[in-house]
Length: 233
Ligand code: ADP
Ligand code: ADP
Image 1 (cartoon, rainbow, N blue to C red):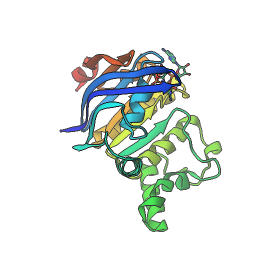
Image 2: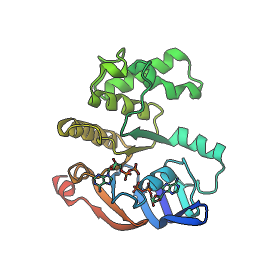
Image 3: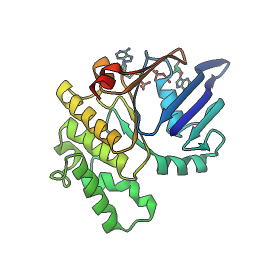
Image 4: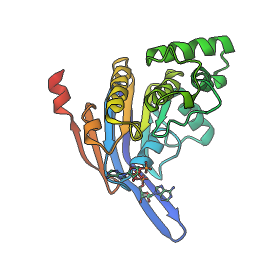
């Protein structure tokens, strides 16, 4: 079953007299439970595509179907609602609030759900335990290592039980050993039934994913199963 279908997805930025053709007709079908790496040189359109998939922006042309709903024609309020329900974001720089504990950072997205506070904190505790940080719930970001911070950020992305996790260079600020730990957490999230899509420049990171899509100049250059992983299965 497809969670994401994009057809002829196009994004053109207008900058004064100039048009930047960031995406020039992307076709992709992404099934529930895929673990996909998005690669490609700087300027190839990766961020633009992630912004569209994450319902942070709308396409100039083409269609985006998310769980069977055409989101390409939605207005900002509808888009925000879909985004809060369906998407969890993870960033290269973690984007945690420095004054809040791990538990409070992770519970934050639940404020909009109307869930009572005790329930929000219990849910945050549960997700922090899932990412192996059950003993760090009271720590603030500056009391944690980079890998631990990214695990808090992953827990925050998961707390709403979204169907899709979008991660932009999630290991870009981490050393090799920590990066591998983070990738194994994404692997586990994927095995729990989530769609995981991440941007990376590093072949060693993409190697952990099951499908590798490469963009070039705003089009899909290659779209391949990762045979190494397929054989290991
Ligand atoms: P974004 O558009 O998501 O910010 P960029 O493509 O601009 O991503 O690059 C993010 C980071 O990766 C930047 O620090 C950039 O210098 C670096 N980078 C960009 N392209 C490459 C590449 N081909 N190989 C290695 N690092 C890259
Ligand atoms: P990548 O993430 O692969 O580096 P981007 O999606 O950031 O690629 O950029 C694709 C193209 O769109 C680039 O030429 C970039 O300069 C341009 N671009 C990206 N964002 C904007 C924007 N907000 N306004 C104008 N041009 C943009």
